[in-house]
Length: 270
Length: 322
Image 1: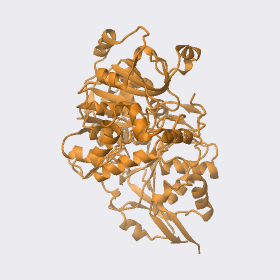
Image 2 (image 1 turned 180 degrees about the vertical axis):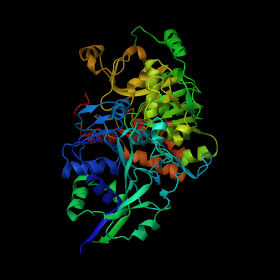
Image 3 (image 1 turned 135 degrees about the vertical axis):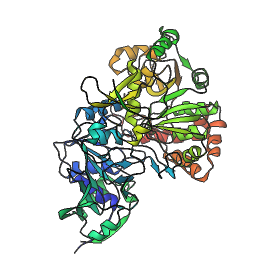
């Protein structure tokens, strides 16, 4: 038995880093945890992996520590292979070069649609207004498969999001994305959280629980959701980061702790 | 072409012939010295009610000294494109300059939430890429472009996009209307007095904004000679005839960064954020905008030379930015 202490964000970064393959191209949300997942993979098993960021940097090699205002900074874009603009990298994704998009979301629904626009059902009088889809809409539309990270909470896993900012499988019906003008055979692939990992049923496009953390029960996972997902059989068990992984994240990827220390601290025994 | 669905969001109807006529009548072809003070440039080229676009990478290389001058001159009723912006649109809203925002992504704290609640501000939904694509259509001199995203979402419903049957493939495709801003603002690393300008680094959409905008104000960290421009034409991002005014503004991106030159002033950004949370933004505006006559005076009296040296030293990566 080992006692471990880490944040939900560190777990997500670890999980996604281990999904990353060197022979694929990633379209990554530049700020925060999605970027750190790629940077961890570059250090552990995929040193040459390529990625695009929406403001136009292609395959940068960020300098650590990244500054607090890291977006678009010279340190973030150091030694890219090309500096382009937003239309060029979006076009590369439109052409089909982006194998996986990696994003974070505020709220996600059973068909993998996600919301970053408003909280509340009334668009004209929202409880709270958020920043909008940014580049997530084009990343989730044009990447072949999308990996979304979020936190497992009832208000974040809902039957229907308050507002579809970025597309999952829309209403889940066959060909819904294609009928809306989105590229064929694309869509959400994994929803990654600190307590559980989800995929999607190939036919119904319903969210399916694929694996849970070794330190939580199935009931506890379902209690943290506003709808009941499909459940894979057999249900997998998530890998948790080792002390070595956590040291690498904290010493090399996010030494200031600006980004990944902000989450919920989990103390678990595995 | 059959229209399958239309968003309900407001947009200025694209009109490429009107744009051509504007260019024909107003744009100066002769290479002339276009250097103006920020007061002159904003007073001449930013009008109340204008649609305004700017290039900025969240908080990097934004035309922020021009934003402050717009607030100082109390411009009103602007419609702005907020593609990938941190708190600058919030600053303009706090200054009372903005009535409509086309949203890609932007910071939305108390100032924005309150303005929306009180109907002083209207948002129209797009995405970062949809706005840069609309600018690309505007830059190409056509009225729309098809693209492979936005469809199926509530963003589409609240935008001005359309879903049509593609006349070539027979499949559904999203169209977005061209955006030709009344005025574009771009902060650049260097340019000559005629407006031949260089932007280094990943750029978001400087070329598209420069080409699509009716009026274009460039602010620059530094003036270089026309000879230097001609010795390295590959480095030119924007040619002179697109440009109406050149404003010399070292540290024009402050409190944001200009990659390769200086880092952002996190303390100032934090000061604005705290003022927003405490409802004391008027004091921030007074301190950094209204109580000083110019960008230069703000740097001298409110920021100070020591801070500017620190921000310059803080930019440890310069490779590729010259």
